[in-house]
Image 1 (spheres, helix red, strand yellow):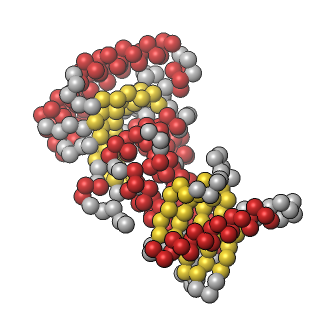
Image 2 (cartoon, one colour):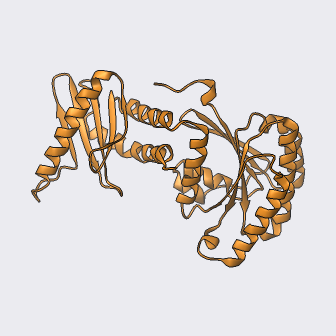
Image 3 (cartoon, rainbow, N blue to C red):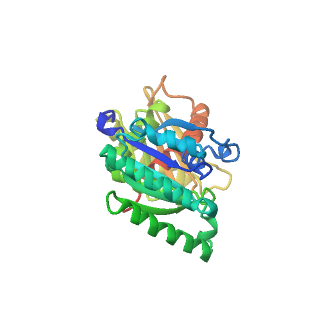
Length: 313
């Protein structure tokens, strides 16, 4: 089931002063870890678009000079209209710019009111690694900023605060779990994640199991594929457990091929341990060697999506 309706497209903007860490947060979400160390400052406005499933996510990275901020706010309808979520990033280590960031937040809220939009506001107190490690003065600074921002917003918009750092990616991904679950039904997130993954490896069925072989998430191109997948995966996991009793045997992956279909079973020795099962048509399914490469490249993204989609409330 593809999810391509207009309602599925959501606009999420990242804003805040320059050098607050917006682009590094996006890099974390994209799992492009090297980008963190090679980001160049923005001279005016950088607009970047990427997609998470069918979400259109817009990142508006503001240059820090006052003349740029004024020009940006004068074109608020161009940048902010139809915003569903606004993520305002504050560098809590740059104390000298607290006043400036509060002023810009005030201007931003005024523009939202004028545009008659009601996005949910998330304030990321970013570069918060010291606070998360017990920095009391940093915690007091955050408390002061929260009070001022609450006063500015004045209950006009839903408001949430998060302490984030790229050095603890969970602080970022867990927050996005909540954001995406607010925007999109969990079942559709799971369905779309699994469908995208299956189509990229040319599979007609894809299933992720927990260590007890309970289904975490699945996708089937046709109803008949479900019966085949359930039978084969159960058999292959049982076989794997049996042969792994022999020290000389390594069975982290198994492939079974019949005349018209092939099945692959892979153990992911992560924490927690999971299993991946794939079913494909012979002739269309990649070789197990090619599949190894594709699965290794795609699994981190799949599990990141599923963590968001399946996060417990």
